[in-house]
Image (cartoon, rainbow, N blue to C red; front, side, top):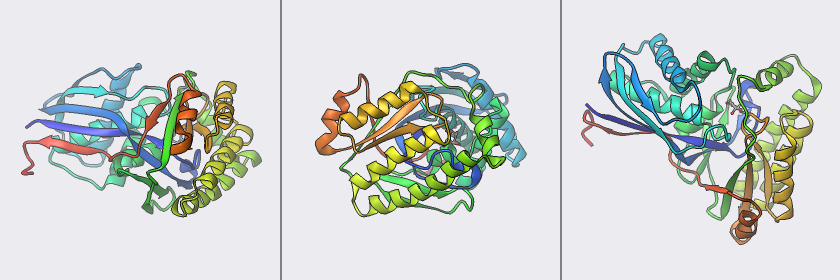
Length: 312
Ligand code: GLA
């Protein structure tokens, strides 16, 4: 049996640093991601072009988490390829975890609900690198759909798809400032929130409200309002949650000057990327304001592309 799985990276449109306290998030899966080619094997043997150090720790951690859920002990031998830039805030590690998890499930002829799998991958992130992340990235990778965003309540796990208007142009601009959950203040921010620190709590409350308003604006086709909410989210992440850095703030200001609808820091923070929204009419001016903007679109969630077990 040969197995091919693909899991996309994600961009969270809005709802940042809300997942681990049971708040609202609104990510899209993007067209870039991680592909695994594999076959069942006795021992875990995987080659990778996945950039960054210690990627195999994630593979082992996913296998260990799935074993705890009762997955039969069938390993895989194969390779991992990725077209996602690492460290840019597009969740390359979650895509790796999800693609490997699906391959391991297929190899063992075993299935679980997508959100159960997403949660196992979230725990794998903690097991691999000690990052106490929420479920945002893994859920987006598994449940994202073409031309839609995923509205997920991370407390109840209720979710629904929200159509993303075709005229909304989505850019991701890499600040070049690299972050690492292992060394960043991510865990510290989470602890401060859980300790009830006023500014941190204020961000989460206002951000949850912005997610609701953003969905309303998208559904009403009011892209201008949606963009304003992005700038407001950035201000809150910068001033109340304090996860931005000057290089990233400068990229957000540049978006404003170029007439973008909205912009904000995305992902865990302390560097990484900026999300910039434009409409079709303004997209060229916005793209020209940056050296290497990456245009992303809401793409399909993770898939099992090929397996001789399927009769498709
Ligand atoms: C990282 C984590 C997510 C989430 C975001 C912030 O991407 O992996 O779980 O907490 O930061 O919204």
